[in-house]
Image (tube, rainbow, N blue to C red):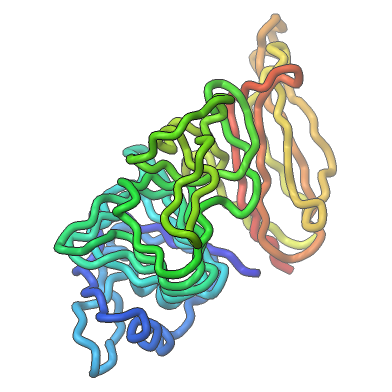
Length: 338
């Protein structure tokens, strides 16, 4: 399945998209929009500010479509749209099974807080994580509406009143995630932080002991005790992600600063079906080689060979083997072409 990202800064988007009267009308509009070219794409501020070149159906009364709405409308199933830190005050309809990922690019999590209307997840299989969901405004009774089964996790949510779950949805990650909490590396499924949650955390793992029940079909079984910024999860900081374009059977290397004299080393995790690790070596720095001394650092070099076309992620964790404390993490997205 192809996966790509489109990243927008809220300060550079065009006019707000008026929310359609129903999710049925929204789905009909989205069906007529051509699919985007599946690739890893990042839009600059000027591009993101440009209103999308889309003509709405004559029966619909809508403001000019923004670049963000166009990306959501034209994405292929399984694609990812990543949004930078900032306030997103427009309404949005997600009519395809895509992933919306919030990126903390230095000034907090991107926040959905529409001045009027809502953010509507109107596609089965849609995923939303990494955002702040504010209180409803403009006379609305919620900020996030879920009309078809979706997955919503690792978000800061103003409270139960901020969401309208009309369909059965998952409010937890689909699988266990490694996370850093109170200087410990733990692993569990993760839910959302709810501002009105008052449950206990007896084992101090950062996850509430009692679930958040929205209705009988919508339950957050792993609610977070604190806002998500208290939890360290790989891939949350954009600064630690890089894109590598690789060719089939042509080796490439990744170099990371290291200092094995401290006991720390890089542990690497990757898809063995797509990549083969050829070697992992430490190279002492030029200065350290000239004047050897205890504590001198260098570089850890990892060499990989792509085995088949596709897209994957290589993750590195810098830690001591006998401790459960992570000093650094890195993630490299690899696009492999023939």
